[in-house]
Length: 128
Image (cartoon, rainbow, N blue to C red; front, side, top):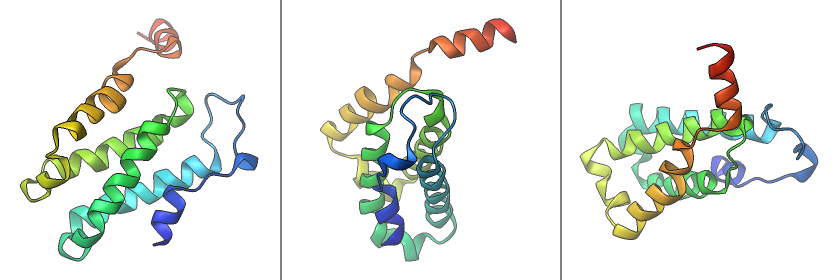
């Protein structure tokens, strides 16, 4: 229940809107929580199955709400790894069966994260 609370947690006082590169404390906390969720889903599957639908939905909605700024890269990557680990397992396919779900994943998560940002181009130019 605490994990769910903090995945949804918003605190404008802890977020510097002008900062594009450095994750906020809330971003780092959410990244750590999702890393733990992935561990639970991988290592202690049977005990964690009742919680999966809720956490899958929470992570999914969090992913959709994130910006493309580099500060969100660790959180986006961790969230995608969590969802990917669930998709890989046949027993969790019901979480992703709906056609609308798949459309949302592609349009709101996959495609936006395939875009090349200006900062990515600069990094490539500096270190090919």
